[in-house]
Image (tube, rainbow, N blue to C red; front, side, top):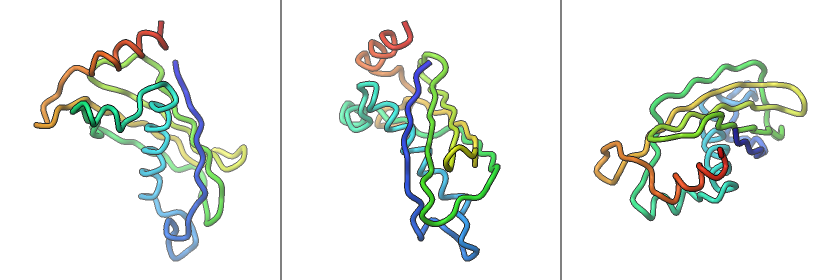
Length: 133
């Protein structure tokens, strides 16, 4: 398993009229967690794209436990529990301090520039072999 912790400061634009973070604002935070997890493990998403590989979302699930508000610091714990192949499964915990505010999961697939599913690049496979053993 690999994991990475990121954090975001809630911006005013991410809240609704009640001052609560709008539910759709959580999705970009998941993207932050995913891209920072990959980068921290030697796989910058920019490099994947430069090689012609993309990782669109196939599925996303979010369960909201508590509300976040403007100026809160939200910590995003991103986990990859199993070594990926063509698909990547990620799990997330979002916290404000020690309080769990949301849990989520995403599934992604490697595609090429034409949108066809493909095997990941060799550099990705090698790095995953290293980190997962």
